Length: 214
Image (cartoon, rainbow, N blue to C red; front, top):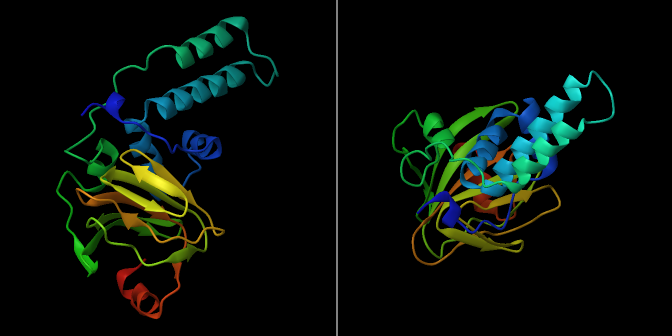
């Protein structure tokens, strides 16, 4: 499968792309954005165009206008076919994820019901993990105390917000409660970043939450 054969329907928002571009996005979320950009031609083009706009504004020393030449280059970048992407990594894992894995396969830890995870990083600004969900299995219903970005790397899942497949990103804030269910076929593998613990509705996941660091 090539990147251009992926039908991506759910993308990164402009504000997250801007934070990623300026280096103000916490590392956990930056890895998700970088992995999505490596799979998504549209978001890569948007990212590069916004980068060019930022450079043009800086070159203008604070002026509010962009030269016609810079404007033409920006429009050309948006309209032209994107250049070849960097290698996506190993199998389902894009290069930014492989970097977090240290070039090794995931070391899964069981969470229950066949669901597994590997925590890639965790600090005060957020945590980053890989999730492995067998077909038809559901992540316990939960809400959020902050932001959660979930990028599908293999398979699919569906919840109250829609259906998500390889390359799709779900952006969940504290106003979303959902119960993601893996689709049929191959297991769903996701890359998920959060900046606060989840709010589980059932007692057992809540009791196990400190152990599994979710």
